[in-house]
Length: 187
Image (cartoon, rainbow, N blue to C red; front, top):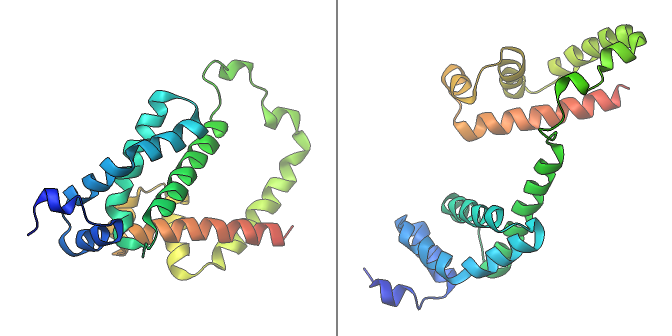
């Protein structure tokens, strides 16, 4: 085992390889020390908020613990920059989707009341949706039905199906995407 001082001198690629071999999280800490200011700078550039940027830096480095094992990384600094930028862009998208808390439900218009002629379209859409669900791959169909129709959580789906967490999440995401594409194709 190399001393922590010597580990700090290793190039990024060697540290990543050592981390993959040993699962020693302190190696991710060395990378964190090296690139924390870069990641914080990227986060500040996109998020423009100190607290949110600090939180994002921690989230990004927490993700590194698993991401470093999943990806073959040859240029860590540029990969980390891209990962950080993508994290921030996702956060900005999520922020846009949120309805401001100041808007109270009683002041919002009710779409159902304004569009009374949508009734038959809803039935047509439901028939299309059922048709599209039937066309999904078996694993996607099972996971999508349990998650959206039976309102089961990921853990319950894992227990029922025997799939691991990542597979369940993947089946649901891919199933949702395939449903959307099918619905668009069918008008």
